Amino acid sequence: SPDAVVRYPNGTLQPLEVKSHAPFAQGGSTRKSATYGKFTVRDPGPRDRVAAWHVPQIQMEMMCLGEGCTSALFLSSSATRGVTILQMGRDDAYLSSMLSLAGSFQSDFVDAGQPPPEDFFADRKGYAEFLNRT
Image (cartoon, helix red, strand yellow):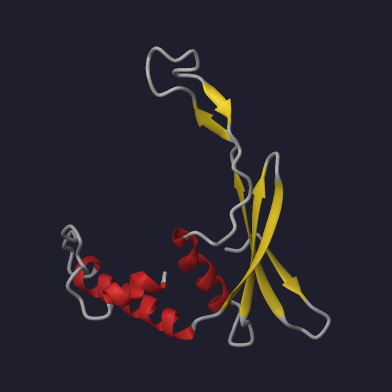
């Protein structure tokens, strides 16, 4: 679900997805390092693009708000370096592919009571293109 839904005066809706990025990183990479095993503040700042793993969620949020929802807002928040607000357009072809793949997963594995094998869609027509769009 979105973190918020922005409603404009003309009735347009936009989901707002907020991702806050922790500024902590593990210290030195060798036991000789003075910071080995400790956390340090290493804040690269807000992201300048939507990460691939957030794309399906944001596209589904737009779909759930209806056909009139044509874009979403993505806010990337950094603890020490501000925020970036990005806009992502709705991609109905992407949504169609995603829903088709989810339906195939449901029927092929869930309904059949079969655990999916590793890389279960690797050879499926259109799957590589779907991943590339993500």
